[in-house]
Length: 381
Image (cartoon, rainbow, N blue to C red; front, side, top):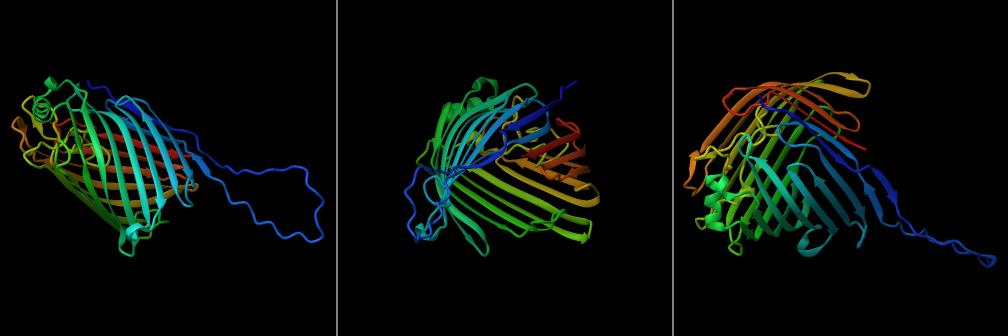
């Protein structure tokens, strides 16, 4: 019988404090007419946030996350965001600095630095562990038809798992070594027309991301993703809609797809009713190796049944579908096309300080690793 764990994440306590400087001391008598003194400009603002996240998980344990946001550090309107996450499967430090700019007609310039070590279960008891350092720079602009931007990055990847534990890992190391790097060129666009203050989702959202891992790195690839969601209010307390995501990544110059760019399905946000990363092509040893292409679709109806005080209680009925396929030029693949479906009921409570969500799913493809009940909760103070 498989063990189930409850995963807990903590992010540091939320306090908002404005830091200002001033001086008070003995002063000479004021003259008869004193001109008004302009107010001192505000100092930098520091915000620390505490968030609590609970979810069902099969392998991950308690995670601790600390986060600090500081505004107006160097120029008016800039922002520095630092976060750190530590858990059984993930250790990550992220730094994001955003500042206004007028270069080349853009409005914002952002710098992102991430250093991480992550694990992913590729069988019931095998973990794929990688360490990665990544820097990304973006220029972005807000227009009447959405937010768009371009950028570039530099990434280095190290495989920490013994490559002999899976045929596809041995194949990857033979071609690219245990360490690899790439220099991607980036582009994105998003257009959000969703209602901001509606209890039930309403409106439309589109997003496109594109990456090109140039020949300046040891692994070259191309990746593109598109997401669309639409929800409509059928009655004052009922809405319905769908969300669809599709993505494709491909190694170029006969390269294999980088390990961290591949697609794995299962769990909240993909196909409910299945364990995280359970839906993916496998190699000759039945080890999950990640897909080069994915399609995920969800259709659901939501009903705002009643409220408990100021907390609305929302019931939903959903149908999830996911397909994960294509392993590129790999020669050790066994099952190269995996699809799964599920349907079920859910309950959501968007409380004032966060969100609590339950789902009870029936996995149609029961021969895969399944998890019928899934739960997540997020709270921010």
